[in-house]
Image 1 (spheres, rainbow, N blue to C red):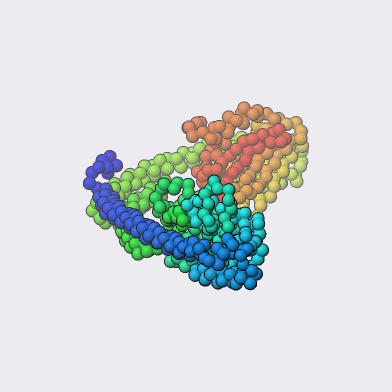
Image 2: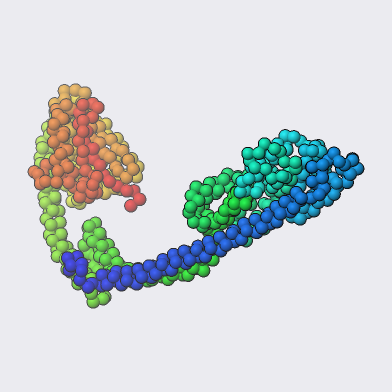
Length: 577
């Protein structure tokens, strides 16, 4: 009681709970701080490393292509190229062929100078030739015009022409406002496949990906175009943000770094799944799992401790109370430890002792009262029935109906033998049904030609069920007295047996019409009422059945389809025992 009324006192349970919280809370807080610090530190270091790598990759690419561009500009001053472009009329065919071959040698040297070069073209309008490192063809005016339309004055040095990447240079260099055409255009066609191979070579692990997003074309190590577009869109959405950022795509988070390249007018992007980035944290996770395991062990230890010294004694007390609720007042509980539970157990045992004494007194008084009521009921039934029996005997003797007289006297003997000789409070259902059948046949003789009796046979397997004595005969008597006695003809009395699940149903039905619906409702209400009322014969039967079998056993009144009254005796009986 003190524990409930004063929860702030230093009880054993409060000490356990407080110590449990004080031990585990700092451990969990410290572990979470360490874990988060490790993730944040590793992310920063990896981001810096990736940013440095991407910047170096972009710088190396720019240096390589700047070298190629230098070779391109140097080639514009080639004597063979200038002679073919500026003074083709001063040369005969042999000289032109010789200079073309010399120019091809120069272009082939440029082509072989870098793995990124696919082909080198010199477009010379004066001789209407497209001279490449490997071939000579007639100048395609439309293709020449497409190269001519390239904005050579822009900062970018790589352009997309004819569906491929090109580095374009013209001679002489003309201002955008000039209407003159250059005498030669030198175009270096770049290999997108070689660039992709170069990006593949820059990856440190299979999980990493690189994306070279330029205005002319996008080159990526990932063949998924939609994914590449989504990554580039996230980077370009906020160009002012940090070069290292976390991006979420398709439910996965990626750590990305990027660097801009004015030379290519594009951005080099490197990305890697965060779960791959944080793989080195596996050691931290292992320690964290160990910490969680230790914490779980502590929880288990304290749980067992609380269970043994707190929960188990309480559970034993609760189970004892439940036994008492179901009527077992013999239960006794003991506790060896010198604590609050020992005092509670002792007081509980003393309380049950007092309760048992009170129950014995009340129960004995109730049994004596029921027996007295039963004796009173029998004394009310026997004289009335005896008078009627004598009148029937007198009538049969006067009429000389000796066959019926013999049958009637045998039935009457069986009836009084059951009523007077058996002093038991309970009898098998077979004997109770047999007695009720004898009584119904006797009454059938009394109401001969006025009432038909239909008494069903008791189903097999029911006869051994022990029931309170004299529960059916009073119901049959009630049916004759209040329902059929005034019937001049066509009276019906039926006794039916039925089983539903674990319920035995015995129905006493008549077709009398003297009882009204209000009386039926009043009878049912009296049966359901727990308030003390004047005990009648029917209520006595209902109470004895309830005492024996418990709810939902007892009587129930209802009007049947013939207009009469049906009294249903319900017995809750589980044949499994």
